[in-house]
Image (tube, rainbow, N blue to C red; front, top):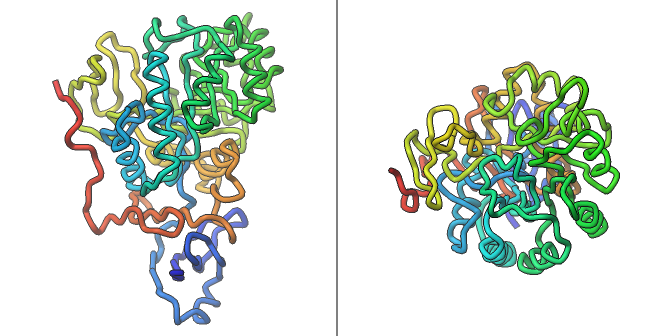
Length: 400
């Protein structure tokens, strides 16, 4: 079993920033040591990160694709390619997110992801599947096709769970739809995280959804009935309830920076889960692309359909991390939003989400400009910037 030390003047732990090192034994963080104790471990391999930051690996619970890779595929190579790509942007664990496809396609994609989870793959770890749909309100469809959005159905959900190999851990539902109550209660009783999203629900409908088991607001502010002073809507309902966590896309495109600040005044960092909601185009050059027969236009800031509708994000979770730090939030608070809470919502905080003894050695070495130097997943180097290796998908993207 390989054993080594990673040294840094800034190791971010839940107990504070340590000037010292992490002893890695196999896949586990065996010990966190102070600077003065380093000399006691001279026999171990020593990796010096100097004054660079060591933070927990980022965890993205809402991601459709990135780097030219997509999770909506029957080809295991797509999923495995994405797993290898994500450490290059600081992500060590994720929930591949399906949404908006037709039922038969969803079942095929669930089967593919389930097969990857069951087998061997390298890179970022799949924590389970997030289904963003098809039980969404057509009035708040976003980029999804109306014909693929359905009324909630427990029987259909059971078939999805079976096809996934019991790997669905997170489902987004619009609570105002007929059948939502039964579905939300079924999911909650089976230990599956339920988010309210793509919803045009009133505040009363939103409150009912929370009573039934919704505990997370899907990409808060986006594809969601907004606040009016006479009808606070879904957004008002989720912000008002202290038991509801809020996903936020922090690319400064989906949500204005001042709105992010306002939400964080209402909800503490412990209640905010940063997400990318990135699509296959994230990390690609600007231009027009054909994705599954739909034209998507990518510029330096965003991806949009030809009618101007935002089509998911082209920015990654680390980009959001940097944005929140530049807004003035402490690195410790941003870690809570991008690593710790996502781990808790995924029911893996005992193993991931913070740098602590006994947990998986999932961490990222960053410089002060938030560039990734190295990423470790379960004690293995999965990205090293000095190797200048690209993990982008260079062959499956159709540029118009």
